[in-house]
Image 1 (cartoon, rainbow, N blue to C red):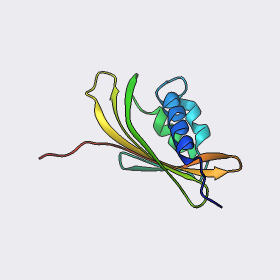
Image 2: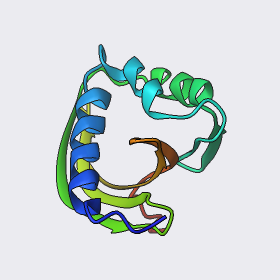
Image 3: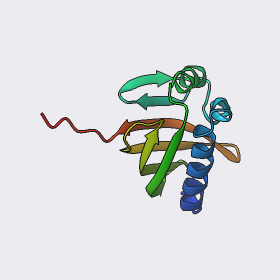
Image 4: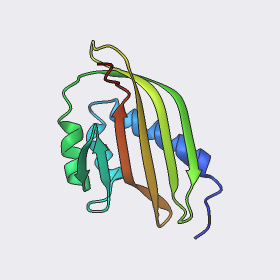
Length: 130
């Protein structure tokens, strides 16, 4: 397969769609449709999760009620299998907590004329200063 020349547009479009769904508690369950039943992996704050059902279980178990987010950068690269690697740098605030910087990396795997999230790595940018 060749490199996807639309990788930047795909990356930005995906991030816009993903966070619109994630940030709306009523839409969050629909994120399950972006993951594969068996071939998707998520690392959430170091916790490893495999498969769409387990990923959705994790996302629905998050306890915050509201989230606000500001994106600093969305960097995308084409992959040799036609997929897209996306790295997001941003800042988010949940409920009344302090805002925190975060990074999230996605690997979109092509399937037919679409993609699924093969890898999703999320980490708050917290540093232990002790």
